[in-house]
Length: 113
Length: 113
Image (cartoon, rainbow over all chains, first blue to last red):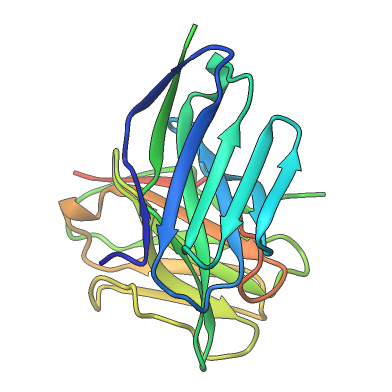
């Protein structure tokens, strides 16, 4: 079992719709979670971080965390073609010697005009 | 302020040659990470530096790969006797503290001919 799992997609949504990206993690002790966006040929850029159960909103983006279910999601409202990218989920794995951020494989999102 | 910088942006080398890739993290960031990303693939963790602690080298694929971080700032990733399978984009990221939000550089595209 991979530590951070995502549906590889591609996920296609029409322009203006809500895109829902899902991520599960295996380390129940994980405390911090991150969403990154990566355009083709570019490096990942941080969208949001979330640390507590519940929702966190930033503009058109909402991150949702459910630690009991070990589940993180990212909702993109009013999706635009410019949102077409690969979205990476990451979780902080805590160990006695060091902490380490583990990235999922990413979900490819395509927003259709 | 200035982000993470990497040099060179592109490197073409012949099989068997050694290469050095450089990363200059955001000023004040104590943690520095190296990743590799092959075309169409996810991020592959290579090595992680945190302050003055011993680095986490668990992701280095072979003993041809090494990295150092001088003075807690600039890092160099060295690949000896390059092979064609080393061709990829090498990404560097830094974070303010261990396990924090990571900010990526633009990457170095390495092509081994």
